[in-house]
Image (cartoon, rainbow, N blue to C red; front, top):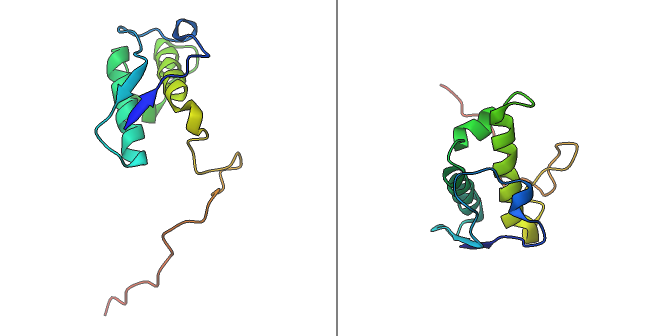
Length: 110
């Protein structure tokens, strides 16, 4: 899958990574969720400091880690721009589309 960076926003405004952001990034997966995760991992490696685990754990405000994570997330949004929003949740953290997995009946332990 190919991701193209939105050129309306200059990476000089947010990017503090070791390597410049390319105009296009190709990831091997065609599944949207895997492709997004691969894009995020590539952006972390281009930046040089954060990892996907760092993104999951977050950071204290106004720290170096927080600035790095915001930089990676801003880059991620620049590549995701045409297909925003990237979440399946509303502002109130409710599902925006019906869940595909239905809650089943529990298995009888006997």
